[in-house]
Image (tube, rainbow, N blue to C red; front, side, top):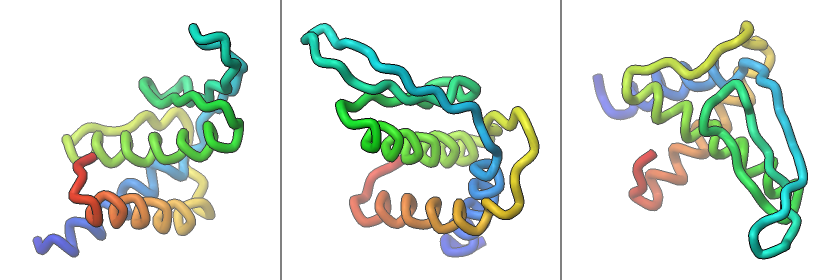
Length: 112
C-alpha cells in the first residue's frame, strides 16, 4: 500500500470514529494561579480534555485533541471509544477535519 493509500484509509477510518457523538462537558475551573479557565472534555474518551481561558479556544482545542488521539489509537491498532453509533451525515465533515490535521502534522514533521 502506498503512503497516499494508507493516509486515505486512515482518514476514512478516523472520520467514521469521529462521527460518533460523545458526551461533552465544560466547567469553569480555577487554576493554582487564581485564574479562571474553562475545562472542556469528552468523559467517554479517556485523556480527551483541555483547558483554556477562552471557552471557544477550549472547544476548538478539544476537537483537535480528539482527532489526534483517534489517529494515534488507530495507528497503534487500537479502537477509539464508540459508546453509540456514528452519524453518517457527520462523516464528510470529519474526513475534512482529519485531512487538515494530518496535513498540519506532515507540514511540521510532527508525529501524532
